[in-house]
Image (cartoon, rainbow, N blue to C red; front, side):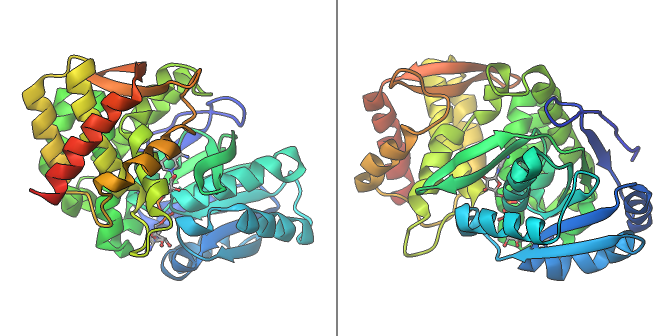
Length: 363
Ligand SMILES: NC(=O)c1ccc[n+]([C@@H]2O[C@H](COP(=O)([O-])OP(=O)(O)OC[C@H]3O[C@@H](n4cnc5c(N)ncnc54)[C@H](O)[C@@H]3O)[C@@H](O)[C@H]2O)c1
């Protein structure tokens, strides 16, 4: 597959997207970077599974490795301060480069630490999950969760480069791979009928044999981000499924059975928002049901019950798209066409959530 290159810089979408297929290409590329030192941020899993595979790419430079515990639960202020403290102890400077080696948790928190330290260090993303390759590692949104609210504290700070190396997916646990595929499916719905038909037929099991699907999702996101880097307008279509998805994910964070993965919560959010799209955005009813069935294959317990809806609606009120106390959605009109800023009354949202949750609990 040809290497795809798109340019951006930190405050504006001019970063480079590289798709590299062999280890030697990746090593060669890392060795060609001219920064004096690397600060590599990993979690304990990507340190064990991914770093050793590419260590030789860092061999000709001073390299400090900072390892954080894995998972969303650590995308929070204490971990951020710890990273910043380490950057300061290492005396990191603007001539150095932060390398985020991991999934969306690492690119979100590592991107935010890069934005804050000395008012901005350069960084690159080396995504190791499907979700990050297709979505999270692109577009410059950086954040931590705060006071139990997803991504409440963050900023826009664009990576210098994002390098997709699909081989990393070989060690990714199946549940993570499946959850990541939800963002691939969402992106395909936004791209149009053909992309949706292909992505909904292939599935996560065959993704390493079909890396062009990851590239298409990443390219679509970059194209939209380029038009609206700071999420004031068109970029909000990427939030399809996420108004409810984020609220459901936040609800699950403190659940005794353990939290849902981001993609699992978004799958449930997609089911509800496809129904809202059929009711309020003109999406064909049969298509909405067919697409919803595809997303239902990606949901995973703990499932909220009707008695959790109040709490979910509470989390929804913190959504960044809201204006003047109304809840706003990005909804699908048809594959390839979405509306942004669709305001829907809380009672109507509750009705749809009740319908979807009853369907899950009484299939
Ligand atoms: N900034 C954005 O635009 C954006 C978009 C979507 C999602 N996100 C964020 O991304 C986060 C979720 O990202 P994620 O799903 O990548 O989760 P993650 O980064 O938490 O990784 C999931 C798990 O997989 C492990 N892992 C990662 N790569 C591995 C590999 N190759 N082999 C073995 N184990 C591996 C990790 O250690 C972790 O345990 C959420 O916080 C979400 O809010 C951000």
